[in-house]
Length: 370
Image (cartoon, rainbow, N blue to C red; front, side, top):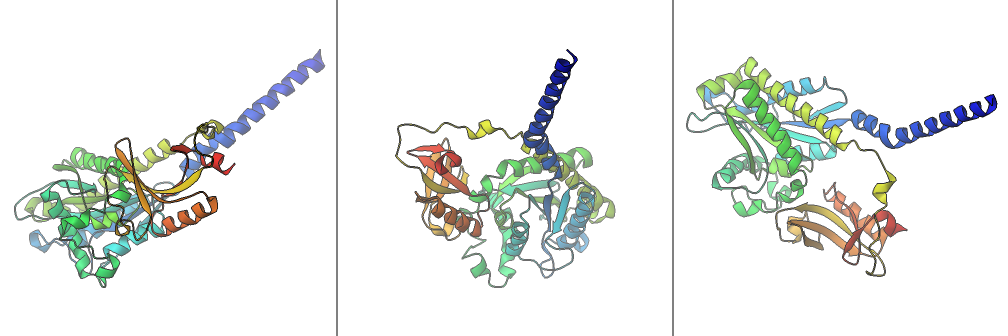
């Protein structure tokens, strides 16, 4: 009897051990991995060097205030666990818009935050945060145009931007597509920034807005551009220039970023389950699967010419439930698909992936490989 009891206890211990092992492999490890993941934030101080940006009350310069705020944001974020901070500039130097985006992309950053100051010919005041989008109206286009005109100061800008004209609304058409997949995250962060400005600092809330900022277009991760306030407003300009004002603005922004990081980590934690790979293969369709590379998706309908897709040829557009999905290539060879994927990523579409079809239906890649 004692032997039987001992065997039962041993069996239960083994069951518990294997359950814990499964949880460790498929559940708990996801939580640990999500929290331990290094989250890279690129902080961009607008303008710099030969480009002073806006010049306001008492000759306060945007480039100086933006840099000071960014350095303070970085100092705050470095206190957070598993957060890596990268600056596009840490001194008063000129960095072109193209290079700012490249810095973020080379770092495979999770977030890009660009800090600026505003100006107006009146005593306008308040803070606003922008995400990438086609200009919703003429005024939004004018705001983006002013920020984008800095590319005219850059060497060989015609070659870098392939004929992009910051003064032309038609040049905005190709800007938004790649960022639309990250638009929800960008808007979420922008809303959190504005909430902190208004709630904690009692700044005038000018809202979250969309426009075609080139510096946002150059990045492929969630990105925002923050206009902290108006240097041309006597009271607000003095506040932004003060150490107290810069510290408070930096804290409001860094708190919003920290909240965003925590939210992303919580939302990306999910137990790995074999069930997610057990999607049934559609029946009564073509004999063999074929592969395409999904490079982008969004609500904007864009011509599939190569100049809208960084020189990639053979892009197709498919409408799906109110959205448009953009694919590169069409092949029955998995090896060719992998080569196309490398080509897409090299062109800058880092979030692109292989999509597999049987007839007109999507199927899991694992099933296609089998």
